[in-house]
Image (cartoon, rainbow, N blue to C red; front, side, top):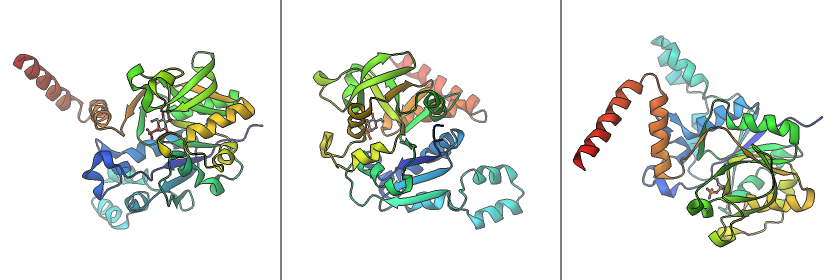
Length: 297
Ligand code: G1P
């Protein structure tokens, strides 16, 4: 029987320079859409997909992430005294059982592939997921869960995939499709941030992966790729040559690139409008704003 995927790696070592000065003293992953940090969206999605072990690859200055998942005795005592059960429940979802979460440091910023490789001893010989918290995906069924269900049929390695405009394709890992089966595609090549003329397609890798331990072995080779970094995409591409079992999965849902300011703003608007307690006031405001903009033209 196929091994269940219960471990997930969260690469969170990046400096978040695109969000300076905010990220001078807080990790980017703590930045919030409405009132929920990016990292909490990633954790909720992982839990829904059956993940039980959470591995954070961090770096200097990311201490706030560890505090975030810890219990907060003083805060909890105050809320209890005030009888605020709703907020207590919200806080409960942020804490992790002892031993459920592990933090390890990526000492040198050598790229996403290197960050994933840093977790090799904790993964050992099991399939594992990787979630990039910058990619927030709003979906009825959480994206990783959709992939786990598809993976139950295919096994192998699977990456989330989405068509992107041709002009943006060079910002992503891109798939060279062998066979297009609709939601699922089998992949014959992958290339990280290629020159537009070398792009095999505009089907891009989005930050959700289900991978075999072989990928970690490929990363052992420390192959340097696009941008002078050790790329996860290259390690997966190597696996295609060896075992021919890499799939792309066109997930159902809306992806927000919260690693960019524009994407973060769009996500804030979308998630704000989803909230029952904010919807009326917020949509009225947006409506007036757009109306005023049109009138001024
Ligand atoms: C990373 C991956 C890339 C993928 C992208 C999705 O790039 O290296 O293959 O397409 O995430 O968000 P980054 O955005 O970290 O440069």
